[in-house]
Structure formats: C-alpha cells, structure tokens
Length: 274
Image (cartoon, rainbow, N blue to C red; front, side, top):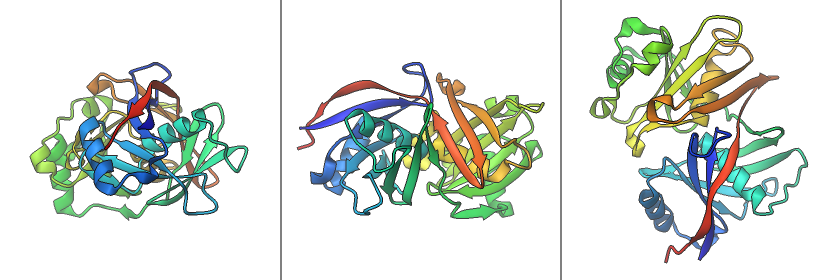
C-alpha cells in the first residue's frame, strides 16, 4: 500500500481548480503500473514521487496522463510539491523546492502560494500554414478571428492562438478528430492596463479533451506574449467552460516565467497497485 494525495491546484476553493493524483514513495512501481493507475484515475495527470537521481533535487517526479507520460506539466508540479511538503518533505533550500522530472530540474518557489519556474521553450516561432489551418478548425475558429499564432512548446507540445476577444475563447468547440496530435491553447485578452485574460487548453491526443487549468500552457503563453500583448504580471482565468474557475498567477522576473496558484489537498488515502 502506498500513500496518495489528491490535490486541487489553481483554486483556493475545493473542487474549482484542477485535481492531480499524487502517489508517494513510488520507487517500487514499474512503468506499466504507473500508466495503468493514470488510466484508471482518468484525471488529466497522475504523478509519482520518487527518490531523486540528481543531488540538486529534493524529489523526482514522473507525470502520466491517461494517454501516456509527459516530461513536464504545470499543475502536477505545483500539486506534487504541495503533497511532498505536506507529507513532511524538507527541501534543501529554504525558499524553494527543486523538482527533477523529464524536463530537467524545475524550481518551485515557496511564497504566499507555490509557483514554478517555467522551463525554456523547446519549440517556438510561427506556425506553418497547414498547421495553423488545422489548429483553427480543431477549436472551431475561423482564421480571421486569430490575432497571433505560434509554437509555445515547453514539454507537452503546445501551440497557441490569440483570439480577437474573450467571448471568442468561450465560444471555442473542440473537434478532436481534426485536432489529432495537436495540443492547442487559446487565449483572449481584454482591454486596459490590467487586462482580463482567459485561457483554454485542448489536448485530446493525451486523453484529455479540455484540461481545466493548465500551468504549462500558461507558462508558454507568458514566454510568448509578455512584453507584447501582456504585462509582466497578471492573473489568467481558466476552466469556466468546464465548470471550474481556476486562477493562474503569472509573473516574468529577470527573464524567468513564474506560474503560481493556490493548492489544497481534497483527498488523502492509500492505494494498492499490486
């Protein structure tokens, strides 16, 4: 039997953010056991806390969706750090936790709320015409509604579309067959010096048609748009179209994107994975 925690991320209220299942002390599990449990929970991500291999890390994390393993994801990073600390984990540094995962070492800052340092983009720049057209059809928008488009892949494979307004984001409808392997994030930005920002994340290829609240996507959006369309500090809203109400606190400081959110444990228990 292994201890597990289910942590709600990006919300100060239970059941309004994005849950992640965190299995503690999972070194004895093999790949298929991890994948099978992730399929069974059917959450957007299930994570496994392991002994670190790097002397700089406090723990190692493996991240699984119902469709397979990811090198990095945002809300699982915050939820797993929360679970590790709540279970008595003591970090080497007083102000942050260092997570080891497929994307390398990820710093998680401990302040009013946990915040991770977004990893560098693995792929950026404009979309080719064919990919752009498929992405638009996949989320039900016409190309004329798109103000900007780019690759913003920091591990999962995201591309981003900036739509003409907030309502256009809310009106998006996924066509999973058209999306195929694409991971499409859509962004709407309101007017003013402190604009309302709304984000949606469509990722059917990993078994998650729409992710409720998405740290990795928001990190990619900030790396892409801060300084051009977005201020250096803002709060993005995500999840209202799937009956959630997440708040993602984003800031860019000395070139580092920090993505933070409230975290709270909603379920604690033990799991028998055979």
